[in-house]
Amino acid sequence: MANLLVLYNPACGAGIAQKVFEKAVLPHLQDRAPTVVSTTHAGHAGEVVVDFLREKPGPLTVILGSGDGTLHEIVVALYHAKLSSASQISVVLVPCGTANALYWSTFPPPEDSPSTLPSLESSLDLKSSPYLKSLEVFVKSSTTPQTTRTLTFAVTSLLSQSDAASNTSPGDTSPTNTSIATVVASTALHASILHDSEALRATHPGIERFKLAAAQNIARWYNGRVKLYPSAGSAVQLYNPVLKEFQPVNTGEEGLLLPGPFAYFLSTVNVDRLESAFRITPLHSPGTAGQTLDVVILRPKRDKAIVDDGEGSKQAFSQRTMEVLMAAYQKGAHVDIKYGEDNLQAGDDHQGILEYFRCGRWEWIPEPHDNPAHLVCVDGEIINIAPSGRAECIATNTISNIQISIVA
Ligand SMILES: Nc1ncnc2c1ncn2[C@@H]1O[C@H](COP(=O)(O)OP(=O)(O)OP(=O)(O)O)[C@@H](O)[C@H]1O
Image (cartoon, rainbow, N blue to C red; front, side):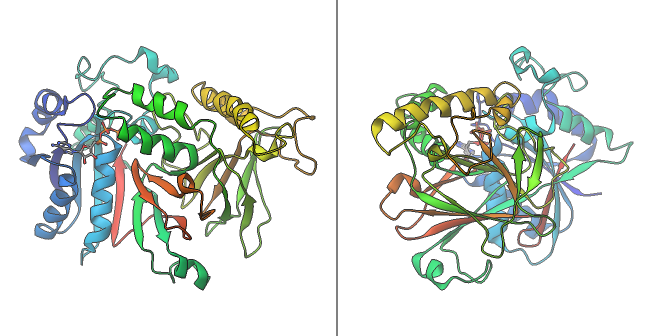
């Protein structure tokens, strides 16, 4: 049997993880005598898991009470720890955070109507709570085999100017900074919102700071270019909203080059949503994806009505961005919103306002002087591309000898 670690972040979400664990989690584990740790500071969760594996190598189950950010810290710590023996880690998710993207993607709310969800605090019965489904599977595993879903990692690296100039293949470069997403790696609007909302935390502690940050950035364009590359088993694919299916795109060795400017650029692994109702990559089927990234992009210049880079054009396109993002809350309807025949630039035969790709790797190469285009968000962590650098993101199932799966 795997070793068992119970780990929760008392500061995440509404700050009720300790209460949830005392009332609804620990009573189900009494006969297993787990190690129980409540985190005391940012970064602590990663330290705890690395120390635990150093002391007790071998398969490990972590019952994790947190949001996505705490799992991100654990994954990054494991990546940098470079443990000598291989480890299989199963995670039982108890969603105590703010967004809980991985949990809600694995256990979608009943009939996709999250507005009717009871609060976590009022829903602590193992058999009926929508929040305790991963725990329920784990508890049942004493009598039935445990089922798990292997996580894909989005390994996101910043490459400096000299790395970029050397033009080597992936893995040959020495990244100046690497982080790992298990949910989202983004640039452009999403990264700006995460960046600016952090600065607003002191004055606006609630989620309204995200709305304020969105309003500050919705009309901004990000200059640069993107390259998309195939995964090991499959070509780059683009979703066709007319046929309602992904279709392969010819990329050649150089990858598929997409010139900017960009309004939106976001990729996900393991999830179809970033909050219970915000299904930004709705075509991802949790548990079925291999080593691929789902990438959603808005490029204003594809719209024929956008004739220049002026403020008027930016304000006009921000309406489209808003329309697309709001439709993501309608069961992911944004992927099927199409331009009319008169709206598309000549030669562009993709009718979706959104470009929804599936690929194995992406590169984001910002214009050197466009500072906001140098922000990259990796599961909420913000990292900065050097002035003439670029970011690359690769999907993989193993990092530093570690495989992680979700009990589901
Ligand atoms: N005892 C603690 N006090 C303060 N912060 C902590 C403590 N323990 C962990 N943290 C920090 O809390 C942060 C937020 O946690 P987490 O991301 O899991 O929750 P969230 O932000 O509420 O949810 P989500 O990421 O799903 O939106 C983590 O980045 C972690 O560094």
